[in-house]
Length: 112
Length: 114
Image 1: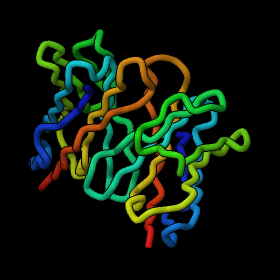
Image 2 (image 1 turned 180 degrees about the vertical axis):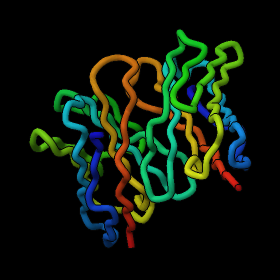
Image 3 (image 1 turned 90 degrees about the horizontal axis):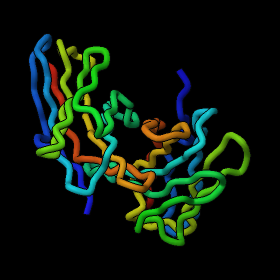
Image 4 (image 1 turned 30 degrees about the horizontal axis):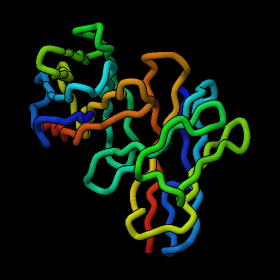
């Protein structure tokens, strides 16, 4: 079956440091992945996506890495800021369907 | 930047009553979705909708649930006879046509069943 999960429920980093949030997926999960940020009381907000024909994609202060060999993806946030504090979800679009499977989420806490 | 908007932000309903959750997707999007998130749990897929019909639905989306696009802008989720376990955040999402287009989410409706 398909599954998408995250490694750590909570990640604490100091302001200015880089953050790395990890996610694993099952064999049949997806060829398209999305990272979302969810702040308290809000819906998931799109950050960055990647298709399986890519290993890396960069945005503004964020990079997503996809390792298909070990079925792992990560979100890197450079120079983490207090405004980055939120829950981060990876989601995979299931093969031949139109639905997203979400991971359990990692809460990123940024301290001064 | 265009957004998905949802109303109401919080709905309190007696068990057994019908409830309608409303969404206005982004205007040039053609694919629409409902998800739910029970407190402290994952976001779960409910249903996808394209070209005025359901394209896929989950096991959660039983015959108590229905969706409708009554006009060119609104997309609704109806629960006919609510149960206590329907209490959750309900998120609407939409995306453009084409492969590799991300789904964009609204801020949700918190549904509380008493």
